[in-house]
Length: 188
Image 1 (cartoon, rainbow, N blue to C red):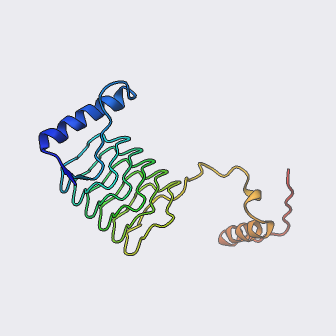
Image 2 (image 1 turned 135 degrees about the horizontal axis):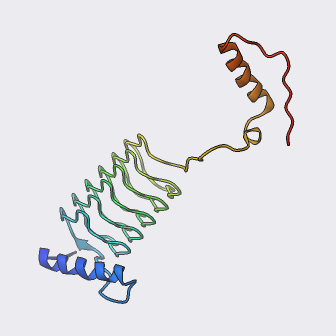
Image 3 (image 1 turned 30 degrees about the vertical axis):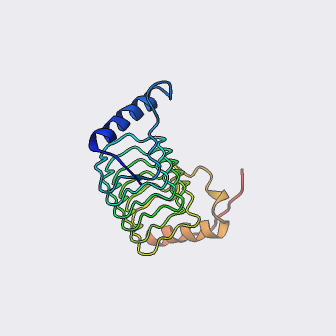
């Protein structure tokens, strides 16, 4: 594992931020493959598109970090703080996130074939995330967002059968002391 001093890591992050802002024209992409970043403070760091393959991020603070499109395949994120982190489209295949805190993290379209045992995913965005092969035993999934909510249902009859609608209308009528005498439905 490659180790970095705090000054070296800071220089890498500055060069990477410049690389992201310039669309790859200036600076350098962060290449932290197999880096030893145990307990590193990377709060709010911009690591968009960074290569962290096999990196040791055990107990690292990545609170609010931007890891969009980052390669975290086989990374060790045991006990890492990823609260509010942006992991949109990140590759976390075979990563170890045991006990990691991902509360409110954005994992939209992330590849999560990872160990998430005991991880906190409360309120995390998992829309279109690939969970194939993910190990979630003991994980907190309370309030996780798994699919987009529709703004409104414009064509109810395509979703509910006539009998279901009749039952619902009858329940409403009964609640108001009325009964249905005649009910007819037809598709437009």
